[in-house]
Image (cartoon, rainbow, N blue to C red):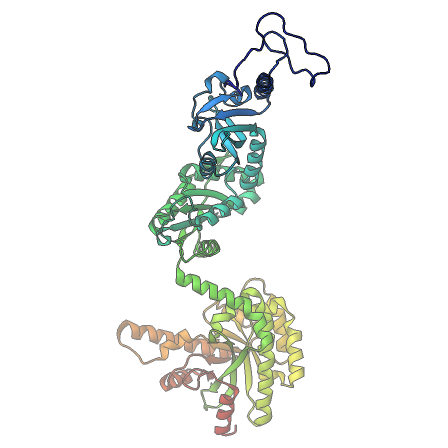
Amino acid sequence: MPGRNLGADAHHHRGGRPEAPRPGTGPADPAPCAVCGAPPDTEAERLAAALRASESRFRAAFSDAGIGMALIDRDDLVIEGNPAFAAMLGREPAELPGMHIHQIIDPEEPSRRRYRELVRGERDRMRAEKRLKHRGGREVWGRVTVSLIRDGSGDPYYTMVMVEDVTERRQLGDRLVYQATHDPLTRLPNRTLFYERLEAAFKPAGPDGPVPPAGEQRIGLCYVDLDGFAAINETLGHHVGDQLLVAVAARLEHGFAREQRQLVARLGGDEFAVLVTGSAGHQELTRLAAALMAALERPFEVAGHRLTVTASIGVVERPVRGSTPTDLVRDADSTLYWSKSDGRARWTLYDRDRGADQLARHELATALRPAVERGEFVVEYQPLVGLADGAVRGAEALVRWRHPRYGLLPPNRFIPLAEESGAIVQLGKWVLEESCRQARQWLAEFPGQPVLVSVNLAPRQIWDSDVVADVADVLARTGLPAHLLQLEITESALLGPGGRPLQALQALADTGVRIAIDDFGTGYSNLAYLSRLPVHALKLDATFIEAFRESAPGADGRRRAADEQIVGAMVQLAHALGLTVTAEGIENAAQAERLRQTGCDTAQGWYYARPGGPEVIAAILRDQPRR
């Protein structure tokens, strides 16, 4: 064994030449004496010679081995190390004896715990990949195998350490991991590493470290999106856009990747994130967001261009307990969207109520099409009453959604969503057919009192479907005369740029269907254009009718008098063009009378009836005298 005397160097001869063994009297001759060359003549001498030969072979293997080897005593001190082990540490073999093992190998848990178990004899072998402490500071990694050597009684005696240099393999693996977790353009952590850190932040500490109370842990996230970045790519080229992203990343990393608490990552495109673990509250995150905006607003010098950019930032900060990584990212994304929709170049802190509303909107938008197929929608009707005689002339169809969770929803809760998603086309067809079928039933029940049905027509129904063919098909299948159908379209949609709806509306008007402009006076109000439109009626928005409440003295009285003059002028203009006028939002008899005096033709509102089922219209028709 290296460095130890494994047996007495007993010499067998007693002077003179040794006696030659007699042939045939025993086993083959043992190895000769190492001192004089004579063969041993006792069993002890033969055993000692064998031990010396074994030690010689072991020492040769120990010294010439291609892997590092060292003997460690029970005090964790090096007894001896071979040249390969010394070379791994940048040292000479003579420097190793007496060094503590922790001066050579990093004492990290849980390897340290397993090593102590081995020294106590509780295990015979352990393996680990460890960083070695090179004298020159160079990174050296070794695959370490530690084996326990026991004495004759079976007690721990010393340990044998064998180290294989795996630095190149480890560095290659590190390079591959880096490439997999970092953005190749900006060198920032990418989406993969961002989610790894995010997931880790929601996990408690391991068994080797203290676990703080969950309520004390907080986390924050800033989602950053550059405003108008696509325009830079389109006008200056993608190479300039890429250089701008590199400059933005460098500014963010230099200013905001502090310690281990903050991670700056590029999530893709022009979107970045700053993750803050162990945050101190929402004020820390809002200050961070303001600093991010200020940093990005300073001009960038890129490829000979002086570029100024702004950013929209979504901010979320909350306790770890009660939340999940998915919740945090979803809410940060929603808040970023709010910043964009609120005007850009700003940060927005997550608001739980607004988030709940956003979630409900998403839920409703997703359920719209299936709800039509399941028959969850109903149509209610509000009468259109002639101001001259009080007779019902028609009814406006108003769709409602009997949602299984939220109850009866008014149109303003889902119509905008239906228009955004395109579900308005399918829903609009259903409302049109249901309303025409009901109007045909009223006509059959009250043949002497024809009542038109007025159905709202969304602009997307004109753009995304053949509305002329749809209306013709519904009228044919329900048997409703065309002149008893009125289609309402908003002024802004009818008079907006492009004029594409006009052709379809003209075709509908040619079939006898009435066309009405809804909410007249709140859009373009292009009076010169009005005479050339295929329109039969104007519906005045309810905001104009507020002027017809009881007069008030002073400035309010003068304003209301002016509004009355405006309404009267619009009624006269409409009549001059051969159009009828309907006023919405009538709440009392005084309003109705004053509108009648202006010459307004029909009105609707709670004064006459709230929207209800088709029986509301039928009841009024039964009670009123025949025209």
